[in-house]
Every structure is written in C-alpha cells, then in structure tokens.
Amino acid sequence: MAPSSRPSVAPKRFVIIGGGPAGTTCATHAARLGAQVTLIEKDIVGGAAHLLDCIPSKAMIATGGAMAMVNRAAEMGLARVEATLDFDALKRRIKDIEDRLENSVSQLLESQGVRLMEGVGSLVSTHEVEVRLSDGTTETVTGDIIVLSTGSRPRIPEWAPVDGVRVLSTRDAYPPPKLPEHLVVIGSGVTGVEFVHMFNSFGSRVTLIVSRQQVLPDKDPEVAAVLEQSFLNRGVKLFMGARAEAVETDGERVRVQCNDGRVAEGSHVLLAIGSIPNSEGLGLENAGVESDHGYVVVDHNCRSNVSHIYAAGDLSGKLPLSSVASTQGRKIAEHAMGLHAAPHRHIDYDKAASAIFTDPEIADVGVAEADAFAAGRKIRVTKVPFSVSAKALINNDPRGFVKIVSDPATGVVMGGSIVGRHAAELISVLALAVTARLTVQDLVESLFVHPALAEVLGEAAE
Figure 1 (cartoon, rainbow, N blue to C red):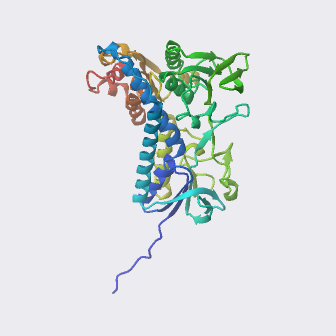
Figure 2: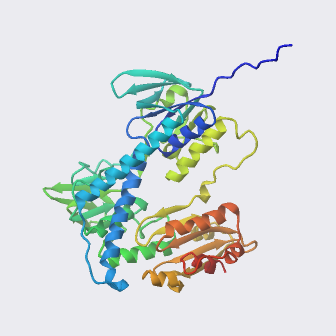
Figure 3: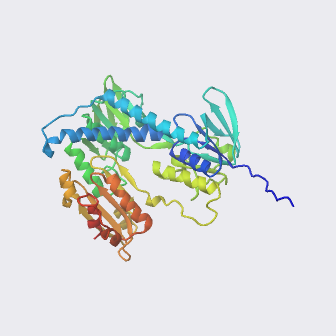
C-alpha cells in the first residue's frame, strides 16, 4: 500500500510597508517561521527615524559626554587637559555608524530570504500593495498578511518657516549644517531636552522655550527639577511658561516670538514639538482600514479592523520607542503565523522602560508616583540619593537618585525612576522587576556587585 501523502501548503506571504525597527523585526521573525516575506522601504533599511534620528542623536551625546569627561579630568586627579569638538570628524563618525547599521540590517534580512524592494508602497485593496519603485516603475505585490510600519515625521507648524539652515526640524539637526552659536530649542519634551544637553555640551549657547511650568511635563516633578537645575548650572536660559507662536529670520539671526510677549533670539532655531504619522498616501481607505488622526487603530495583537492587516511602530499610535516597535514586529509575526492561538502575554505598554540621554541621564518604568496619587492608588515610595554610593563618589558624580514605587500590601515593584549616571542601563533591573512582578524583598536580597551604582537599587528597596 503506497504511503499517504499530504498536499503541500504554500507559505504565508507577508508584505511589509516600512523598514524601521517594527518592519525589519517582523520580517526576520516571519521568515524564520517559514513565511515568504517582501519588505518595502523608500529611504533607509533600518528606519529613517531610527538611523537618522535616534542613533545619530545618541552618538552626538556620547561625543559631548566624552568632551565633558576630558574637561573634568582635573577633578579626577589628572593634569588639566581640554577637549575641543572636530565637527567634521563628528559628521564622519555619525555617517559611518549609520552605514554600518544599515548594512548589518540589510545583510540580516537577505540572509533570511526577505525580498527587499526600494520604493513607496500603498494599499490598492485588502490584499494588494502597489509599489512605486525608485526607478519610476510600479509593481503590485499580493500578501496574505499586510503589515504597515511607515513611522512618523517631525511636526512642523505653519508659523515656523523650516529651511534646514537657520530654522531646523529634528531631522535637520543630526547633525546640522554647522554648529549653532546660539540655539533656541522650542519644545521641552524628551527630544527637546536631549538637544539642549547635546548642543550645550558642544559649547553652543542654548535657550529652551518651555510651554509649561516644568521641563519634561509628563515626568515626575522631582526628576524634572534635577534636570532644570543642571541646565541652569550649565548656563542654559529657560523661558518657563512661554509658548512659541512665530519664528522670524533676519540674516544670521533668528527671533522666536512667544505668546507672553517675550522674544528669544539666537543664530538657529530647532523645533522639537512632536511628530505626525506617515499615513498619507498609504491607501488605508482602499482596504477599509480604520484610522484616528492618521494613526491606524489596532487591538492588543497590533491588528487593525481588517483581520489580516496589522500596524506597528509610530503608525500604531502606541509608545514611540524603538524597543516597543521591535516587540510589536515580533508579536505580529508570531500572531499571524498562528503561534498565539492559545492565551499568551500581550504587550503591556505601561511596563515599557524609557530613557532620556541628558546629563544626568533619566529613566523610568511602570507606575509613576504622581500618576498613582492622582488615581488614588495606595503605593509605597522609597528614594535613595546616589550620594550614598561609593561608586558614585569614585566616579565623581553623586547627582540624582533612585525612586521605587511598590505595592504596600504585597511589596510587588510597580515602577520606578532613576536620575543619574548610567540610569538608562540601571532601569533594566527595575523593568525586569515590574514585568516579572518581583518584590522589593527580591531586590533587597539580590547580591549586587560592590562597588557599583546598582547597589542603590537594593538600598531603595529596603
């Protein structure tokens, strides 16, 4: 009797529009799970927002940090030396980092058998995507699964005549054409304060326009206060409670008119007032995909109202973090390939750790103290300054603190904030504690390295 044979099943076809962290992660995971994957990207594989914004900004901040460390050498018992910025060398360094990362992402995708298409993709039906290729031709690709991950771009109001020379968007400033003599930053959120720190460390004078009564309006007031004091100590001028409403250029000078009558003058202006989703021309209406103010409406599996069309990254309207986008991409691949047929852990955006790469660094995760009190939740808050840490004194940098928020009944860690050196690394311990529902006692009983900044985590948990 001849052995029975099963009919072969064609692999699922994924079509992904947008090659940022969400799209590339989804592509590689889906390919590993046996899917046939096509990835469409118009600019840079790895994502323009990631490789042209996030990575260059952190590279520039690292250079500024190295300069500051050299200039403080005398405080560490060394002969006094002075570091100066080689702006052209910095530009070459950033370009080299971008090229290496793009090449590594492209090679990974190719090694997984992902088809890369250089062009602009748009939905023409629920399963078809038209691609306008870089050579001017068009091609239509069909997918069983469609993933939209086109990212976002800087928001530019009508009153700001961005020219990329004197009036800059964030995309123009990594790095800018020339180092500003006096930079006026509009916007005191995460991106704005990083720019203040970055250019101040390079020697530029900086004025920051703060529309509310504290920088980082969505962060813990104690955290914001430490950063504000650091800025003031470094000579940054703060326009508190001022909202920019007009920008004028006059030769080599730029003026920013505020709603309270104050005027900020400088050599350059930089806008850091948020972003808008790249959904225009995506053809959402052709596939019946629901959106809200340009963001695709998704469920806990990142799936739109059309069951086989997903959205991830900034376009999904969730937390605009590369780490979140990558996780969304992985979850989409797993869900679309059937790995989540049984109950599974969904993405909990409230437990995402984030960091701000200023000096000192700022990081947080989970429940914030102010939010908990506003909601009437019972919490226990403990705070320990880095000034008690031997390692902080060795580093000659005792600024900042660790704050832990926990459940007073169970001791489970609910969240925390860290201000100080290496906060972006240290927050990973609290992120793990929040995700795994560890208790403060678990942290107390952990045997941390001595001397190390992480010891303060254990002390704050007591």
